[in-house]
Length: 138
Length: 330
Image 1 (cartoon, rainbow over the protein chains, first blue to last red):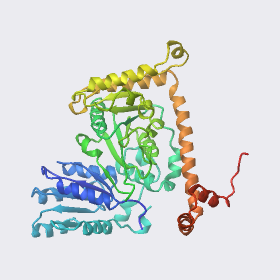
Image 2: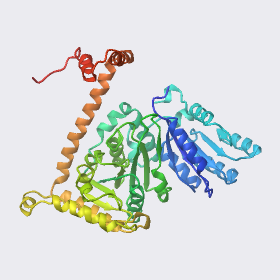
Image 3: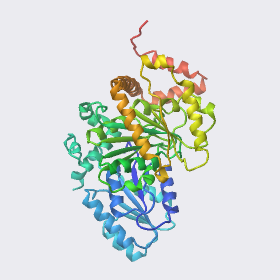
Image 4: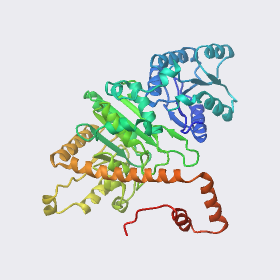
């Protein structure tokens, strides 16, 4: 059992200016007892990985509605891996075609939430991904 | 791979040599499990000698984060490194928090001379988090030239920052109230430097005049000032978003620090700080040990009796403690 709140980075990569979804999620995760660090709009892959490193988050959530997920998401995963953050899970929210989802899930993304995903399902997926073995919790 | 990357370098070598990942992981331990790193923290010297710790406080929305971004940019142009510790409030209901200070600090992202760490207050009410002081000490030992601490949006009584930073900046925005508001005790009293930010908005001069009147009422007479050096806080007009007044602010910060050094006031501050920190930790430790003595069932029983038998809360506390031995002075 974790004693401390999950720390999650919510980031908006690329030139996508639609942050209503990210804000709804950030607020919902806050209300679920998590410490949510929100980066704001127009983040480069390198900025997102660097923020994840500085904040030592348990997990990173991306919100993408621009359609450029096949370029941005692998770049973010690669930046994170290069910064020794390979063990930090990455989840996505947004509108993504099925075949892209399959490719991303195979390429290092841990979960994808599309339109209609309930907050409860998102929270429990994040909690599951952040559960660490007891011997690594200290 | 997973296990290896999760392990933390518990000696401070990595942090001192600039390993950002080691620093970041260590800060998490400081926040979540201080006992695990108590020995390492005890090694750290009190952080007042050369490095400058700057506290920035003020009401929500007065522009603290934007001001810090502008100030940091200026320090970076001068080749100095900056760590920023930004505290935002935790929910008293869920324990969750929305830490949004990075949004305003966006322009600094990716600069290796800057390290930003967000902290949730986790129930602490003085404007900082319980572990902010420890986090600042670690940042100092990591070698940052400046450590800037941003408090939660402060009202009138969140003044913990004054015992952490020898330089405390209180940020106000135009329209914050009349001159009687300015004379109330608390937040404005702890200012070493007063900033009227958003000076691009109407009312900035008026806000400055109200603060000036406040300072004039409290200004010492000449004879008092001769016996005892007294720093009178300057009032700086800034527009962080237009990056105006920032040079002036940096100059005031530097001269206040020189003043502290010249009059030996840093030593005095350090004594005051250590006394306050000792009391703070004594309370915290005693409370923790006391709570460990009782089981959850015992607490539940007390609450139940208070409700059912209408026992006064102070009476319930006295009854609970009467079996504990305390060394009394009288």
